[in-house]
Length: 434
Ligand code: HAM
Image (cartoon, rainbow, N blue to C red):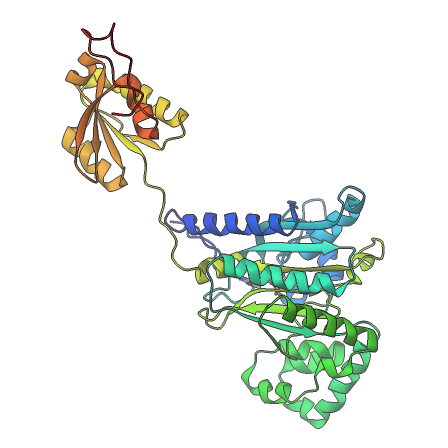
């Protein structure tokens, strides 16, 4: 046996129904907020993420599945979708084709992280991005949409957390304030944090090492260093969130682990998820489009971990029970049974059938295991009379139904009662079902 790679997982029948349900909700919510679906390749140039996600991030430094392809080009499996979405926005000049560029994508991402509950090396994201709008009204709408998505999935213990990380104007002052505040405690930080302090002090907030936490907790808050424009943007965003009745908490530690953010950052945390509790995260990234070679356009979005959404969702309905299981008795019934299965499926019913000439008992046992709502029996007698025995499994009631009426019987359409031969010429045919 060759097992799956560590940190990857199969999504099996029994579990896939929850995924399909989640994906359906995701698509409905995206459509309601005006987002159109796009699909981008899972493999991209490594440079896109080095420039986009950021050289100083853990993702680029430690977690990318990057390699040289056979043509000598540096490529990588995508660790996140945002740089790809920006690339597609620029490469296809999407703003010339769409009235407002609001796009979403669903698909696998790859990060070489230490696997644990809710954290995988191949995982799936819903990624949502909107381009070209700098107005704080969109920040509030995006956060409200993310909260609406979580609620639509039936997750009722989630918490919305927001922050502002400022812009290129005010962030350097905040970085300096962090270094000053660290002072001689810098030597007590972990190796990674000491590197971060030198390269990008904001990244210290990403640290999960327990001994760093008291030091990180005592650091200054980004919101105290915002320039006037960033401050009023943050106030407008939080004000509108209140007006939209979104419950949220401001957390100064929420700087997010990616370099491109400016101003608003946010996450939604799930209550039952354990250590990996971020259901989704995102923010504004007004400089990224230009940084990746595009026009100077604002951007904002978020990505949700589908595994985590599915984990946090309450139990939904199980898989759809088949409408019918066809039991064919004897060789002569095989072909008519397959024809009946075809007709049922053409009528959009889920129909199962057994293969090979097995006993009635064996076929009934399988029918029971499938949970089929009806068993349709085709034996010698039924064949001789052009009929089918329809057994309603919940009640056990058996009815002999004309072969031509079986589909209508199962779809719930009225099946006309055949007129009595003697009365046929005088009485009108009743229109009600049997
Ligand atoms: P991120 O915070 O790196 O942001 O990931 C977003 C979400 O993806 C997380 O909140 C989590 O639910 C899920 N996730 C991340 N890593 C893993 C993993 N190893 N296993 C399972 N789930 C995971 C981004 O990716 C940004 N591109 C979000 C964004 C979009 N910002 C603006 N637009």
